[in-house]
Image (tube, rainbow, N blue to C red; front, side, top):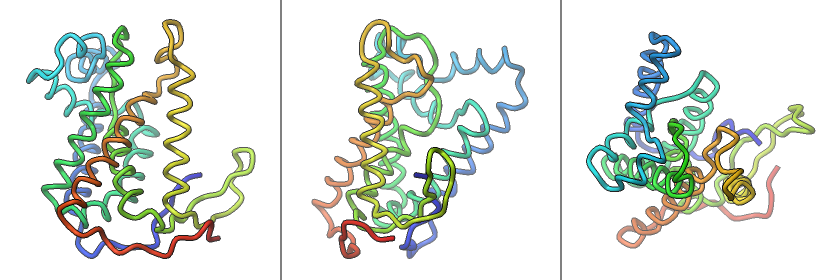
Amino acid sequence: MFPLGTSRQAENTPWITYGLIVVNVLVFFWELTLSSSELGQQFYALAVVPCQMTRNFFTVDTVFDTVRSMFLHGGWVHLIGNMLFLYIFGPLVEDYLGKFRYLFFYLVAGFVASFLHAAINWNVCVPSIGASGAIYGVMGGFVLLYPSTRIRTVAFFFRVPIGTVNVQAFYMLFYFFAVDLINGLMRLGPDTIQTTGVAFWAHVGGFLAGLILAFCFTLFRDPPPVDAFEYMDD
């Protein structure tokens, strides 16, 4: 499944979401000015490296590394995929939380994602880059706040797109979460951790952080009105 948009629109302009997208794109353009060797050096210097982070949890350097990691990407596909998901799911979460709370939410989800990834991959000395941990936090917040909102999604048959279908957020986003959780569990062990280049546990950590944070915010303000919940709508 690949999302194209939501059936509900934000009432306010999502300036923080747009700003995060712009910063990610600008940072990627800066990456393009570097040679491969320079880029690798910058990733090691600026991003989260699990084997280093586990020796220095909760230090100022770790916080800065985590924040910088959220704005670094390994290629066009990595960047565009992340920014598309942020563009689709970010505005409604920002609309509910408000701009400053949403920025706090995004950064905390990204930190928790990096923390869990580093804790499980404590012996891996490969930089962890990308906004996906924080974006999975946005997805976790979205599924709690808007579980029945319909997502226009590309349908695939054996990886061949065959059309579009409306899927309620609960089904789609928990599907992504379940896939990452299963992949993460299958790769636990001394010989299998972090062999695919995908930080599955960062996705899991970000999603759970988004769920918990969104729930905490709903304790102090009414949740948004939700669409009627159905088993499927196509």
